[in-house]
Each structure stands twice: as C-alpha cells, then as structure tokens.
Length: 109
Image (cartoon, rainbow, N blue to C red; front, side, top):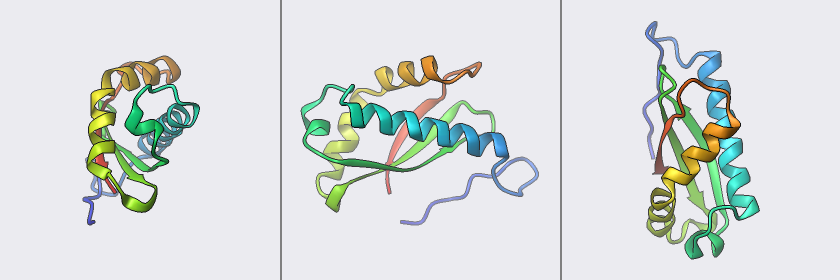
C-alpha cells in the first residue's frame, strides 16, 4: 500500500518534533494494546502491530498504520479501534505533554 509522505511547509519532510511525537503516540498505542487496557473482544483475540504513526505539522492529527498478525480480520480490528478512539485519545492526552491531544485515524498498513 502506497502512503503519501507528510511534509512540513518547506517540503523537506517531517520535522524532528513530528517524528518524536509520532513515535511517542505509537509507543502509547502499543502499550494500550499489550496491556489489554482497551476492552474489546476483537482486539483481545488479535495480536495487533502499530507499524507507524504520522503526525500532521500542527500536531493535531495522527494517522496510525495498523496490521493484525497474519493480516486477517483487518476491517474488524480497524472498526474496533475506531469504536474506542475517544478512550485511546484520552489515554494519549494524559501521557503526552502536548497542548492538544491529536485526533487519531486508523489505517491499514
């Protein structure tokens, strides 16, 4: 799957801050899934990898690229993550010291 590269205003690619915040969001998402803090039967029955998180230049939108192990039931996993988006965003907001908690979109990797 081809993904569009997010770029800064200068067109040179993501800034160090965008990369750092994206990686922090990815680690928090992975932690939530590993610890089973998101209570959902679909997520509990699948091993899910968060391969990458890209942040918009204003740090208000995060796109998380997700892949369940074996690539099975991708639509079900994405739907389960969308269903719990508000909880995930609140957990990320508590962990990261940002002015705004980024809105999260989930996409298949």
